[in-house]
Image 1 (cartoon, rainbow, N blue to C red):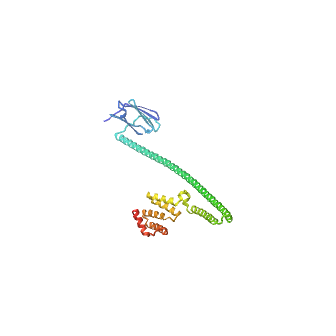
Image 2: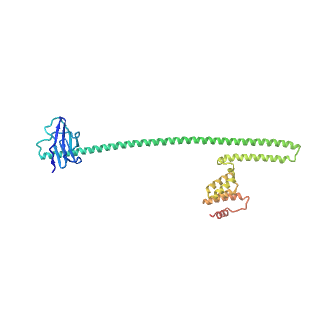
Length: 341
């Protein structure tokens, strides 16, 4: 049973009550203080102090200071008035119990409200933090999208500039090719003029000096002029009809060079590239049977049997005029045996 403490002192003003309670050598951390507007309790085992206050106080603004083996309370009155006593008199045990229970309920409700207020404040803080984070993420996303858009615009401008540069380069190449063709045509015209002049002078001289040699020289001059004209026409047709030759070197425009290149690619088992080389060589000279035979061998490696038979037939038709006749089926079987198909 706790011991009731009665040796306390108190003073008052119209607005406040000052209460001093000795702890009687009890450790400060073992002291428990409970205060409501009508009830004050200090429990420091084995001692107990209870006060059923004379009038209500403002327990939220009231203070308690523990130190030097003493608890000093500063209790602020709700109504400014002088109290006759600190604790009400004439209170029986049932009344005391009701006051205690009411005070506990008030304290519990207040604690519940404080907890709810704290939880609500925490939710508001979380909501605010979430909105701030969403705003920051939205700004970052917008910033990234702006950067992407700027990069896209920059890349588009660079691509357009590169296309314009390529177009101008192609136009410059075309102009240079046209100039070269014009120069070659001019040279051919000059050579024709020279040949005509020489022919006319030789004809006039041959009438007087050497009538036996004039027909042969005149025929050679005419043949040379025709040969130069055919060569110029062939070069002009080659540059205009085959756009793949625009970017090739002079030696790469030779069918024999393309055939050797296709053979090397076939040896490295790059059959598609070899077929491309043979295709271009055939476009340059479609009278070489070896080109068709080599391309048929590539088709055999790639299991394109119909194309292999077709190329073998073309080679057969070309060789028909110059070689001993070989049936296409027999030639196809020989190729199968040769390449191990």
